Length: 81
Image (cartoon, rainbow, N blue to C red; front, side, top):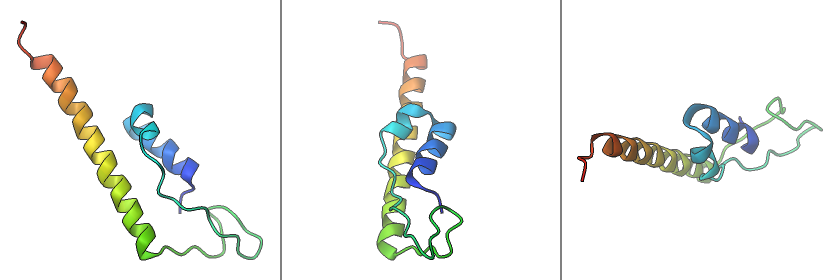
C-alpha cells in the first residue's frame, strides 16, 4: 500500500505535477502495528470506505487527464479566427 506522498509522486510521474497537485491523495495514514510504519508494515487493511475514496480519486484523475488532452487537442485543431 502506498503512502499519500508515494501516491502523489506516482500520479505526478505519470500524468504531471498539475494533475497530481489537483488531487488529494485518498490514502489514509497507515496504522502503526508492532512498531512498524511504512509499506512494509506487518498489517495493512483497507476498508470499503477507503476503496470508495481510492475509486473516487481515480475517477477524478481520469476526468482531469481527459480534460487536459481535450483542451490540448481543441487548441491544436481550432480554426484561426
